[in-house]
Structures are given as structure tokens and as C-alpha cells.
Image (cartoon, rainbow, N blue to C red; front, side, top):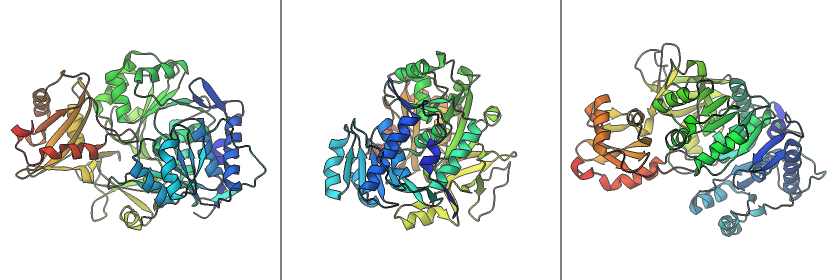
Length: 508
């Protein structure tokens, strides 16, 4: 896109009243006036040090006012922000810092010891969190940028499990933010509880949308104490909560979420993977007057690709809905033909629109695999019903080949989630010399000893054909998570290697 737009950060910050709370963290609130001043100070600091348009600037900090001001400052200066996962390994951080060629890194005081040694070796200057914010100066700021200029590099595992940096433009942010605001009906009185990291595109989109309408973002980084999150939601009168499947599974099965009252709550949004239908039904029953927004997206699409209207949740349960206002979604067979609506045909979801990013930083090969002719090939396999609603079957690489049959882990996970003793379940395939793959289910129960492997298999046998029933059932206190809060199946696959090629009775 060649037309010019106002800088994405400037646009995002333009809607809030100067005295209104933009960021709420603990007992402190940062107003829009303060946030604008702090972000301009950060921008001026970077430009005064000679950084040029498009230079990359890292951000390693917990969710909070420092991160937000630094991020908006980088984008406001016409530079490219690179949010770093706070719990990433040292090897992953080194790779991202080196691959993106960062000139500077904003870092919180708590995380400074982790970054300092590698930053020095890689030549990235550090800008450390301080009570003295950089003062706004008369440093000239770029008045506008092109839609196709980079605003951020957002880290994702992509298709291989290795960290990748997705190139996100100012135009991508503007398009996706406007579409999300429209379908959610966000207004200046909205106040969201944000427990998702801002290094994740979902968390970042929550920030963008609420600031753009002049709303407030309440940040709480202590989800390991979920009941405290709920206290914070109630006390700060949050109108919304954004979460991935694990967020709601833990809240529904490990806290009093369903029994508590939240008078200000008007919507819940869920993305980052499919929340099993039993949990969606529990949410509907617990909060019948709250709008439940089921969404689908990818970092490669800035954030969101589709949503299911709340009034269609009951009759289209399990669907990701249809594309956003400026997103076209197609479900195509391998020969490029659309699948037939209402049939059992399965195809790949292919997306196009102004929210589709240019691809991966410094990785032409992977970009060529997933971005072709302006369209994003998502790797998600789906079918389409007679009304045009899309239902994801599975990611192409996650199918299990068991006893000569193709098995969707999501289908098995869905059945296991029907058991009230289950908080989370994840299903993978383990190599087996006779069957091809044996099905391995990892389960986090509500409490130790409340469920047995035989009970899980007996329940699955009532609902599924024999070849879809897990041969291996393993209980864990909790399932490992990625920095985005999703179940880390790569870690589960590594831990399951000990079962490879064993007979079922040995594996159990």
C-alpha cells in the first residue's frame, strides 16, 4: 500500500482524554496525558541518539506502563519495535537480538541481569527502566509513515517451533485494530483485564484496541494466583477479560469464577486456539448476559482473522465464524478450489486483506511457503457449513496417523474435556512401529488422584471409535505453556519420546 497514514502510535494515542486512565497497574494509573508525554520522551531519546527510520529497538519488560510507553515511543519515532518474551530462553533471546540487528533495547530493571551480558556482546545499547523518564524535547518526529513501513517485529514459533519475527506494518495495525473495535463494539468506558503478555500479538491487539477508543487497560502479571485476578477484575470494575483457552479452563475448573459476580462485566473474548465446547457451554451458563466473543487469528495476520458473533454461539458451537470486515477467508483444497459448503470436504484456510503482514524477517524461504500472491496460507485445515461458517478440523502438521486412520487431536481433547475433573488436556502422536502412531493424552486434573487412566479411556470409548482412544494417558499437575500462554506441545512431544515404539501395556 502506497498511501500515507498517520503514524500508528500517534493514531492509537489520539482518542483518549488527557485526564482519563490509560494504563492501570496495581494501585497506580497512568493517564493518557502522561502516557503521551512519556512515549514522546522515549521517541525523542532514540532519535537524539541517531537512530534512523526503520531501525529495530527491542523491548524486554513485564506488562506495565514502562513497556507501553517505550513501545509507543519506538513506533512514534518511525522505528521498529521488537517485543521480547520475558520468559524466553537465553538462546532464543540471543538469536532474536542478533537476527533483527537491534540498535537499542528498552529493558526493565528486574530483567536487566538476563539481557546485559548478551547485549554487550551483540552491540545493542541498553535503555534501562528508571523513575526519571526521558523528557520530551523538540526533537523532530516523522509526521506520517507509509502503510507498508514496519512498526513491529512480533515473535512467533511459525511452523517449525523455532522463533520467527513477523513483520507488522503501520497499515496492518490500523486495519486490524479498526476491525476489532467495530465487531466488539468497544467504547471509551471499556476497561479490560489483560493477563496476556504484550510480546504476544493477542495481548498487543488488546492494548491497541482499548487505547484507540480511549478505554483503559488493567494489567496484572500474576495469573499464577488466578483468584487474585478475579478480585482485581471486580475491584477495578473491568468490563472485559481477554484470554487464551488455558485462561478460561483454569478459571472455570480451579477458581470460583463461575460463582462470582462481576456487575461491570459485559464481554469475554477468547482466541489463541480452540476452547473445547464444554468450557464454552460452562461460560454461557455462568454468564448468560455477557457477550462471549470467540475469535481466530495468527501473528502473521497482525492478530485477528475472524470472529463468531455471540448470537450465533449456540447454533454454530465450535466455529471460528467468518472473516473480519476487511479480511477475506477462503477454505481451499490442494488444487486451489473452494471446498463445497455443507459437505465433509476439508481444505486449508487462506486469508487476504490489509491485516496480512508481509512475511517473516530475514527468512525468504518460510515467507515463500506461507505468503503467496498476497495471501496467507494458514496451515489450518477446516470445513465450511451450508451457511458459510468455518469449522477448524486441525492444523495440518498436528494430525495423528493411528492404525491407518487420520486422527484430529482437537477431537480427542474435546471429548476428554467433557470430564469435570479435567482442567486441560493435550493429545499428541507417539511413533509406533506397528500402528504408525499411538495416541498419547496429557491431562491436568482438578486435583491429584481424582481421575484414572482407565476412566479416561472408558469415557472416550463411549464417544469415539477405538482407534481414536488414547493408548497412553499421563497426568501432570499442569501442562507446559509457551510464552503466549498456549500449551507447549513441542515440550510434550519431547517428554513422550520415552514411549516411542513401546507396546500399549508398557506405555500405560
